[in-house]
Image 1 (tube, rainbow, N blue to C red):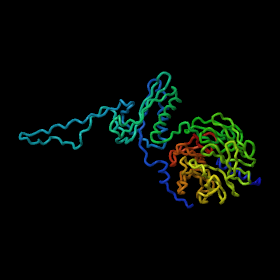
Image 2 (cartoon, rainbow, N blue to C red):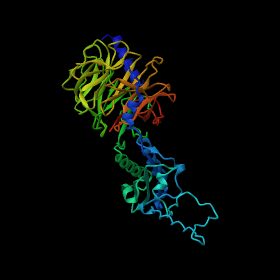
Image 3 (tube, rainbow, N blue to C red):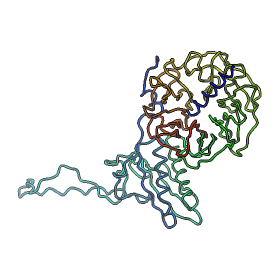
Amino acid sequence: MTKKNTFALSASLLTLAGGIGLVAQQSDILIKLTQGDRPVIAVIDFRGAAGAADHMNVLNQTLFGDLESSGLFKMAAKAMYPVEVPQRPEDFKAPLPPPAPAPVPRGKKGRAAVPRVPVSDDPPKPIRQGPWLTDWSAPPVGANYLVFGYAAVQGDQLVLFGWLYNVAQPNVSAAHVLGKRYFGAIDAAGAQRVAHEFAADIIAQFGGKTLLNSKIYFVSDRTGSKEIWSMDPDGSNQKRLTSYNSISIMPAVSPDGTRIAFTTFAKGNPAIYFHSVETGRRLPFYNQVASMNATPDFTPDGKEVLYSSTASGYAQIYAANVDGGNLRRISTSRAIEVEPKVNPKNQSEMVFVSGRSGPQQIYKMNLDGANVERLTTGEGEAANPAWHPDGQLIAFAWTRGFEPGNFNLFLMDVASRRVDQLTHGAGRNENPGWAPDGRHIVFSSNRSGSSQIWTMLADGTQLQKLTTQGRNSTPVWGK
C-alpha cells in the first residue's frame, strides 16, 4: 500500500471513530424488539421511616427511572393515582358487599306503592374500607401492575421492602407477584443500589434483562487526547481507562466483559491494544507487521479477535487468537475492508464494511471468506454494523439519500433486508452499539452541537444524553 493510501486509510479510521432494494417495514422489526403491547405499571412514591426518609428522593427517582427506561412498560401517570396508597400488603382492605336493597313499601291492598323519589338504575356499590386493587386497575389509573413498598433503617443498614402486584386479580393472594427485602448503606448510594436491585427483579419477572452492572465504553478527548473511558448505563461513574496521551479509538469489549480491545496510535501507526477491565493493565497481543492493525472485535466465545490489517497491502479482514497467535487472513479483495463483527448466535458468520463496490457498504460473509454478500445496495455510505444479541438484526449508520457525511441510524433484518430508520435529521448519528438487553442502543451524535454519547430504546424513543465534557464517540456496551 502506498504512503498516500495509508494516510487516507488512517484518516478514514478517524472519521469512523468520530465520526436500495430495501423495503421499510417498521412494524415487523419493531414488534420483534418491543414484543407488542406493553403492560401499564404504576409505581408509588415510597416513604422512608426515620433515617431512611432523607434518601427517598434518590430511591424513588432511581426505581421509576429504571422501570421507565427498560422499555418493557407503559408508566401510569402519577397525577391519576388515588389519594390512599398502600405501603404494605396489609394495607389492602377488600370492600364489603353492598347493602341489600330496601324493601318496596306495599299499599293497603298489597300493591307496590309509587315511590316519592326516583329510584336509581345504578347497582349498589360495595362499601369501601381502604386501598384496594381496583383503585389501580380501574380508570383513571388503568394499571395492570402496581409497585409499592417502603424503606426503613435496621441496625446500620437501609432496608427496602418492595412488592409487585397484578392488580387485575380478584384478591391480594392472587395479586402477589413479587415481595422481597433489599439491603444497602444508609446513604444516597445505598438507596440507589437497593432501588436498582428491586427494579432488576421486576424487569426479570417480565422476561427482561437488567442493565445493572453493565458498562458503556467510549472515546473521550476531555483530557486533551483521545482515551478510552467507561461509565454506567445512566452516564454516572465516568472513568478513564487508558493514558497513552495519543489517539486511542474504537473500543470493543469481550463477551464476558473482562477485556477491552481498541485501536491506538500510541506507537505511531494504528495498532491493537488489549486491556484488562478488572486491573486496567495492558494484556499481550502480537500486532503483525503492517502500517495499520485496527477495528478489532471479539468472537462470541471470546477466544479470538477479528480485525483489519494492511499486512497484505490493502486493508483486509484477519482473525487471530486473543494473544495475536494463530493468525489467518479472511478477506481477499483489492479494497479497504474494516469493522468485522461476528454474529453472536452464529460464529461462522460476520458482517463488515467494504469499499469493494465503490462507496463503503455493509457486507456479510462466512469466517472462511466464502459466501460474500452485500447487505446494502450502494446508495450513500454505510458503516458501523452492530449485531443485535439475537443474531438476526443489525444496527448501522447510513447516509442513505442525505447530504454526504450526515449519517443516521438504521435497523436491518438481515434475512429479509427490511430496514427501519431510527434517527431523523438531527445531526450526525453513528457507531450504534446494542445493550445486553437487546432493547437499548448506545450511539454517538452531534445533535447537541458536539459529538456526545446518547442512548435510546431500539424504536428510537427515550433519547438520553450521557456525556457533556469534551467530545465523545464510538461507544460500545458490555456486560
